[in-house]
Image 1 (cartoon, rainbow, N blue to C red):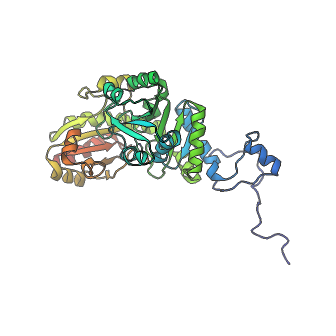
Image 2: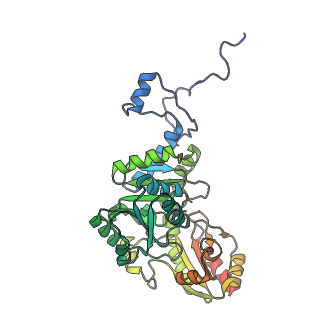
Image 3: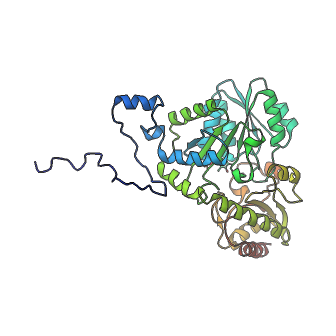
Length: 392
Ligand SMILES: *Cc1c(COP(=O)(O)O)cnc(C)c1O
């Protein structure tokens, strides 16, 4: 025997250092060793801070949670593997068979599917209602209604929910109000300041911001609800990968700058598109011609978002020609990337609807949703103007 120590024996440990890294280290370890059974006991009892098995929690997820908690003025939020995991954590981790939940009628596609298909299968009944119309939501309430789920600005028609009215209604009736704040982000809207009980994010979008991470976050005001969501997320294996958390933190450090830039450009692009011949209408929440402008100005306190929707004259042929001519812009079903992306609801998110139902929502073949990125605003407006004129 030449070696007294096998090369696979662990741990060699990290080198001693009196200085600390500025950037968060990546901790991919799945397991964490403790000194002895007494210390492990103390860890499980919460008397000592430590990690055990990364599905139960790991340093990179905790760092991301701290950032997000600070942004939402919250405490104890849960970071999970995707935005949909966060939505599931709220709906499936907090509700039970026999409960009833009300969802906004224009929720993110997969949230709608969860409401329509999966919750009813588990004995949780659901109703969809227009969140801009308090009377419609009130009419949907039943004695067993436990939760209302809404988005502040709807996809893709950018209607603004009556969050103040909903918060009053929900608090009067002892119903939880959950707000998916993905489109508006904590930079433009703080759901807890307006009476929400739970905030949800797809961190995948603007917060991480580079289309290279999937991550979600959910947080409640009530610590007991956070604990239930945390336990549910661990049991069902929603834990995010340390690498995704590490990348998300890197993205979040520039989130405010990116949001401010994209929001400013979006306002400019909306006004620019409104002046382009060939554009039938432009939708941006704070524009004068938006039906919910007053509500948008009040809730967003003068801020906006990076999303602009518009309708071209000329149907599918014009849409194809526009996407072809829009050089340098990705035609891709996401949002919040550093680059501007285009989505066409009639062929993607809303393709399952009949043409009549799409028409009811105003989603013609010429309708595009734009997620504005960080390009030079004048260059971007130029690209759109040229593509619109090539298409129409
Ligand atoms: C993308 C999105 C989700 C889902 O997030 P993923 O990270 O893709 O799972 C939920 N809500 C909204 C509003 C979204 O835009």
